[in-house]
Length: 153
Image (cartoon, rainbow, N blue to C red):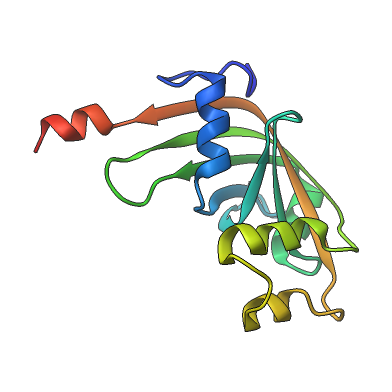
């Protein structure tokens, strides 16, 4: 099973729409080289044609080392407010340089609106080396509690 064949109530088209519109971080789980579990939140963008999530982080972040040692991941992208709904799954992650910070620029615009803030300027600093994390889902499951939560009111 892959992102083109999700389980749960949503079609692939609904998954694409949700992932394109939801401006919440992806919760990403991986393993450390010592085989301990590790979880973090990252900004993401969804490429529906490539069926992959793209994230950016500092090249020296712990997660970069972890993913280079072991590429299997689990993830969740869900609403933070009722009615709860979202996408979760598992797949593999690759790490590659993002010397021009193209992905980071798009993510800053997606989550902050523009690149004018102090945070954006710090993230885009020439001194900061950036990488792209590609997450290729192998299994995707959706859930949507809107009907259930509406009935409980």
